[in-house]
Length: 393
Image (cartoon, rainbow, N blue to C red):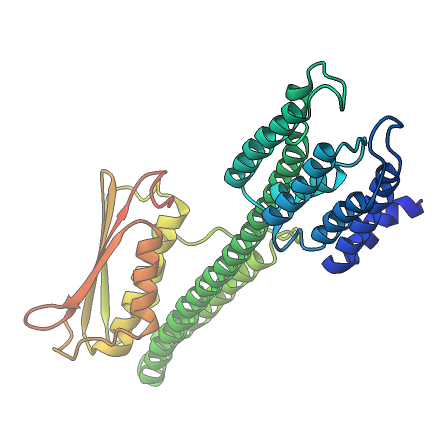
């Protein structure tokens, strides 16, 4: 349940600074005025000078935010004037207390220290000058030197707390912006990864199906058995594409309870090479070393790089033969795809195929080189880290 006292601080914060200053002056005058009006019977009573010093102190507080140090000097001088004039009061130092608090809360630690030193010395000097006839003499100079430090310490504590809250808010805002940037980066990386997967699946499948469909057309009348075999390859390629697309979509819909098929690796390279069998390009595969023990990231990168390289051979090289070499040595996996196509212009760097191969090699922690072979042909060579920990970057 919200009470009136709970809503009061929020209402005060909603007021403009000028209105708050006027309210502070009113409250200070409400407490200081009666104390200035009544003095001890044996001492000087309130007169025009008493009320003049009070008016000067209250009016000075209206500019405490803009000029805190001059306002503290004016209110301090008024308070010292009362003491030197012989007017005694418990709340006559309230205006200078408010001014000293403002100096600390709207300044810095260096200014607070200097203000405290000057205020303490001035207050002690006034106490020594006035002597024992005005107030209780026991410990008078020490006590009079301590009280100006109280509002300064309070203001310093409030300012420090505000700075800490502001710093915490800035840290939270920076952390939120960093989280948003990280989320955007992850989204972009995931979009690139999905686009790369779809490109590899669709481009390879269409190329392989085109090759096998061409074989079927050429041998339909002469070699019906070869035509049927080519059409079976077309069917198998379509099924493989559907299976890989389903696996990709399954990753996107992870959490629905559907089993996700593991990604392809180098153990499926013979099946990949068979899809190009029977076309105008003869592809051979040579493997050295066991294919097991690779991390899924490295295995998938190797499979996709060979897949993309063979697709480029069939689509762009005009080669008659292509050789795929996979060598598993200690700590590394070397892939090489070489064709015997005629010399041609260098491949365009803006293509998605070469870009995808570079990205896959880099993501797996490996390197890739490609370029024309002297005398004709094109070679793609990739070195990937081998072992269970390979590619975890």
